[in-house]
Structures are given as structure tokens and as C-alpha cells.
Image (tube, rainbow, N blue to C red; front, side, top):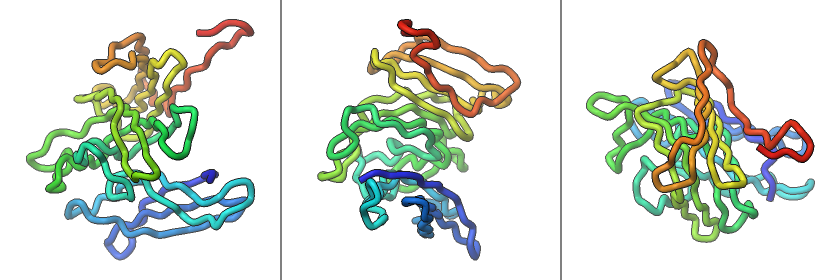
Length: 225
């Protein structure tokens, strides 16, 4: 089934945090308020990517599953830190988008849960938060998520936004909207799809946050970059 639109909000209701899902199905909005499962005293809200029962005007509009920390899938590494947190720009990077498929995202890393005890980055006695660019294999039948590749950007932390794409040559490009080492600027990078990613190119944007960076194949007929 096809997901049309899902918008996530954090709602602070009666001093408790909830995640609000607004799902557009054929012009009608479906609203669901989901209380967040507390991973720490501050009740951090961890956003998920849901699958919606809808395609070509058919389906119930029900949420079939949620992908993310405290969602419906098991992280095969057993490490909560391997999930995405405060993420942006989800993209399929396999020919198929159902069954067993590969999925890329820019993982900002806000309120990253570091261990089974629920310790959260950036809190007292814990390491600083950091961002990553991961690719996962998602198995809908087995309800598992497996990290296939990751570029860990630590110590860089992107407070909000960001984007990621995999190119035809398997290199990965991504935009860091608010790099912690230049919070009033932005950064665009292309890296190799290797176990230890190597930088192919890097561009710095000074004095301005960039919402996202999108790689274009070309601006000219017959020319590929």
C-alpha cells in the first residue's frame, strides 16, 4: 500500500508528550494522537515512519506498522543507538519498496537512546548527541531492521533538518542543515559507500542554514554528473 502524506508533531498535553500523526488519504485527513513511551524522565518523543493501508483510492487508511525506536520492528543489532532520531528525508534505495527493502534517512540524532538502560545523548554523564547517515534493510514479514551501512558524523550533530541520497554509482550525498561545528552555516558532502566512507567532495555554506541539498544528475541534455 502507498503512503501519501504523514506529518509529525509533538503535542504537549497535560504535561505529557504525545506524537500526533496527520495522514492525508485521498484528500481527507486522519488524525491519531499516540502517547510516547517514556525513555527518560523528560518523555522524549521518538518519531516513526508508518506504513499506511492505502493505494489508488483503496484501503482503510489504517497505520499498518511504525518503523523506529519503540515502534513495531526489532533492531537486529539489539542496540537502540542504531535507530534514527529526529530524522529527515527518508528514501528507498532498493528497486522494491515492500517486502524486504533498503531504506536511507538522514538521522539527526536528537535525544538518541544510547543503551538498554534508556540513557540519552546530551544528558548529564552521557556523550554528546551526534548525527549519522544510515542505510537499513527492512523486512516487513520478519518485522526486523538491519543496518547495512552508516556514515557516523560524530562529533558533528545536526540539530534539525538534513537530507540524504544514494547515487547510481552507490556514493551517498547528504546535506547537513545545521552542523554543530558551524551552527549558522550548512554543509554538503558526497562520500563513498564503503565500510569506512571516504569524502569525495565537500561544500561549505557560510552564514546560512540550507534546508536540504539535492543532487541533480545534470542540467544539460546528454550530460551526467
